[in-house]
Length: 374
Image (tube, rainbow, N blue to C red):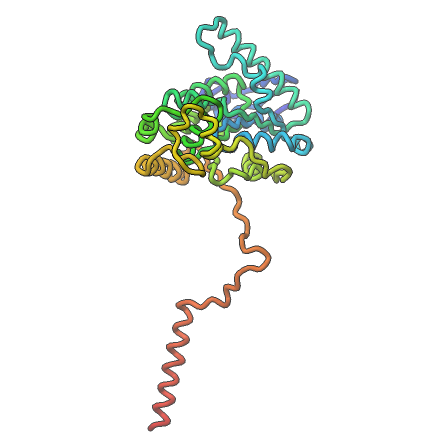
């Protein structure tokens, strides 16, 4: 039985354990862990043991909607062969919505929920074991519906109010395998405007007139969603990726999640973009009269409402930039050299430090003239 270097008081659901040998059972074999160096809390200690035994990393990419999530999934699917060769696996909505996650979120009125949740854990464990045996070192599970749906957000007039409970159930179903969670966020005015437009595209009609005022006055923002997710999965690294930085750059997003270079193939494909006003009016039917005139994107909020939403998002971004109280990490794409092949000649730029030379030259010139006159 392999011997793994020690753990300081490691015990599931226990802050301390007596010195000795701790037995770790995996799907493949047993491991022996010497108590003495790992932290005593479950997720932190578990993560170190997972790393020691070479367990597969599992990252949940939970959306959000209208943040280029479908384009990111399309990119991962298009590069699946190259990613697999690099040790990166991908499960997208095609798999997650075909029975893999059935039983994790309770269905109202359905009996046997506990048994369904148990079967879901067993099903996920089996699929993870298969991926690990196939050489996958990092598995990305991407489905924006894992934290809620857009129709629910619009119906409730709230931003993923059930995200915490959903993530907690997912963390339990993956049974200690999660090593990371990734969340895309977007400016609230643009997020809700895109959601409104997509609802028309999907045949759900134009949102009620009073909903815009309700959303603009809402207290819940991305900061609350992030706090709920962090509380639901303690010890799991939470990475926040702004849509404004990563939209249209799925390779940068993948590199931010895995820490490795990402392929560029199909990186500029754009899917599920919100139609502009002419297309929305054609799709809205009898509701077309409720849409404004114009040719560009639909912005359902007035200037005052939009300012309130932008201010709330700016506060969230400032909080994230300051460290989010240790709850999450704000990812930023690497900034490339934008000067191109012919960079600016900064040595030709004159500034305040040149003024002293002019003063000294002028003074010398005046003194020389004075001596000649004398």
